[in-house]
Length: 269
Image (cartoon, rainbow, N blue to C red):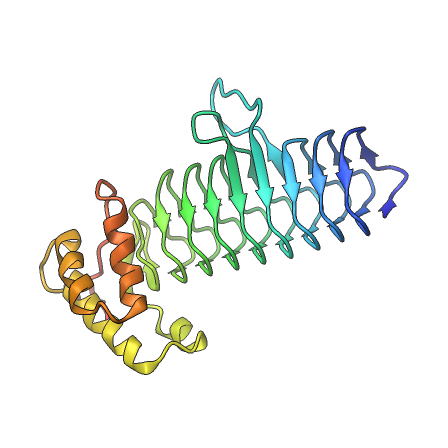
């Protein structure tokens, strides 16, 4: 364990083996840092924060601050960050809120680039990449392997399904299905993330079925939630299609992000 003489580690903070606390950093009482966690200089870890092993936090990051809610009460709320994450300069991740369940969660192997933010009660999966300045609002749900381009933004309560790609400068106000590429100021699905699927070695036959299911659900004039019921039965043996249909049907009151049409100059090809 290494604590720089200018750092402040309050009584009651718990530091794992091999933890490093850099110059002028502050670790509040009640915070828990796993083995091998490294804080560079000028990092603030509030006492309601737990950080998994080998996570690295860069200067000016503030983790576990009270949720940005007028009149909010942070008593008893938490931020839980997984192992092997990298949190770059000036990132802010808020703790949960009493009204929202009390816990903000970030999974393992996530990468937050400079000036990105995750709000209170956000639920972020494993292997998520959040580029510079991207903003995830409170209560948002982000699946495993999602990638956000720079300055993208996610509205409160929106969901982004696993392995989706959100283009830079895009605004997510509706739920984006798994494996999609979403583009635009108010995002529309531009198609499936075929490159990402191939990188994950999804079988060609499954990708072909996914493209057919995508067209059936989004490009043939059907209501997405109704079409998803039919697609779930038609492609019941394709797990990636089930991921999409389960996502659409999981929250019937949430709006699903529509696809870009040929009239918009784009669509799944």
